[in-house]
Length: 320
Image 1: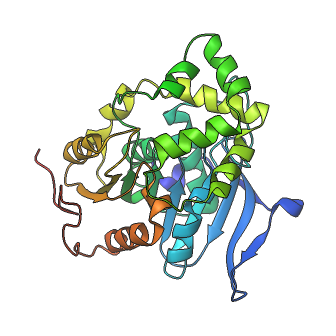
Image 2: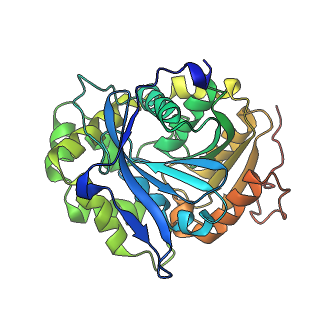
Image 3: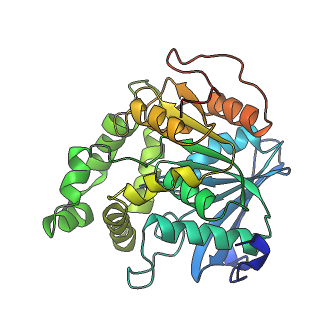
């Protein structure tokens, strides 16, 4: 379906004090936060920079702020559009009766956002859950996606860590995630499973994610998303429908979705490149400048500077 034929349900508007312009130390406006309605759900969206558009999709338990450091690196060259998915961050948290919280539902919200913002075509970058959504968007709406970047993406049936396995147990799982996941558990999850062992990641950032998660509606949305995205077969089935030039970026020390899954994903998408970084599950958070450099080269269609991974070349197509 062509972008121009998408039903223009998106209502772009700025809402009171929650819409704000953020400035850097030079006093130059860096981003504008707006509330935007897409497919009937209110989204919080951060708009930054000028240039070719790039849509940034976050992972589970985070929000659009996960891209802040990358935005700082790239906003002088690109128009960056980072949103909070329904149920996350500052976006509306509809009940499951109104929103399915599966990958397809998230992808259609993003597609409607394209129409409402009149983006046309854009590069789409997705991390973890956001990677699965980006892949689905590229497969369902190829006319919207000019380039695709998948970062430690959900795609295959990777083993779940103990905390998430418990959260998926019938009855007791909901109680655990909604009532027992306190700040200490949340910090431990990030430190032991999301991040690598590199020191220096600020605990304040983890606490910032926790503050947005620590709300009954947000916890319910996270649980609904965990359950609705556990079966990855429909995600994997869409890999052969991706036509956009694709780059797969992975953290070498990813404990949630090991790097072998990234290699496998890059081989299943025709012509995809593969970059391995010395990080855990969130390369863009741990090494934003390096990640932004890799992303910038790909978006500018430049050849890679060489293999820094020790495992696979940056943009070498995998075997088919």
